[in-house]
Image (cartoon, rainbow, N blue to C red; front, side):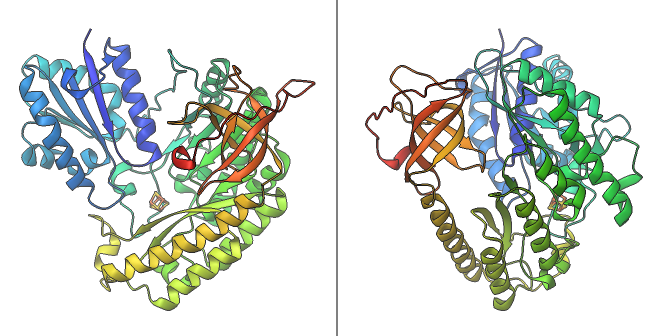
Length: 477
Ligand code: SF4
């Protein structure tokens, strides 16, 4: 049996695409190689959102090239956003690559491999499926229990944030029919999945294909589209009642409308956590980024979410050092962090991405200033995160257990409703994977919590409190 090896870097969407690549290959008779040296097919699945993506790709290709050369007939493919962005140019830079594959062309991979194996020259396939969008269906994993899964509901992006290359590499927005989404979730849940995250570049702009005019540009159309997303959440909750938790990522603040906020109050299946990228707390910069909301709009929407679901926590994404960012702009970002009370955040230094409007803005912020601001931002978020985590000591949390803690044989790991990562000790010999268990928290780690299981789903009497030895926090997130 032929073997494949996939190396992935980048965003959640890309990780999800790698799973689809693997499923397509397994459907064509491939199995996963344990190391690249054994593979008949080597794939680098790339993301171009962050800095140095091309550099990282070339470095990985340099690592893989000797494996290809050592094993006659090995096929080397590059997939993902850098493949889409570079296309034919990639074959000029790395002529030993056999296949350049865009994100919309994953299902064509087996046919392209056959062509190359039969002696065809290197091939580029980077065509958007605008007329007939394809959404490859996620399948329950054959050989291990998966508790959580991602389901794509839309792809592409009609926003035009001036720093972002995604509209270029993923194309315009395309939406998946609700029937397909609900069916896929039903199948996943039947296969043991208990938590689903709906995935899309601007996931909350989802609507039935063709039902709202292109990209819902006007405010009224946008409200109609977001109501449809709330309707989708409601439909999933009703038609797949066994689903325990339903998350979605990444929403755009502009599409966080009253209809969607009301769904958070109404639907038990929606956990008390939303990741809502804000990027900056300065209106001046938000305008330069073309984000189409103000800091005040963002605060009003997050306040409404917190009112809709008591105890709801928020996390976000920031860019520091965007062209023209002054110390005053950055202070406004820090003020927003305090005001909203984020308990987690991803922060990135601005880096110019090819083909983006921000390239023309100039006003580069020096690298050392970016470093300093990013460190100050993380320090503030960490203070808030630690205060939040400490507030749970001695309290009980419902945790959906996802499996053993990475690198820690004695414990299991899962997430609370508010998305805190919890490492827990279960009674000896008891594997709570896939269960919703009650955990009494005894200490916080740097970015997660530790505790011991004091109750299990469906049990009248909780298991006796069992305290195994707690290893140090080295394995915790
Ligand atoms: S909403 Fe903005 S940041 Fe997000 S994918 Fe679209 S263009 Fe990029």
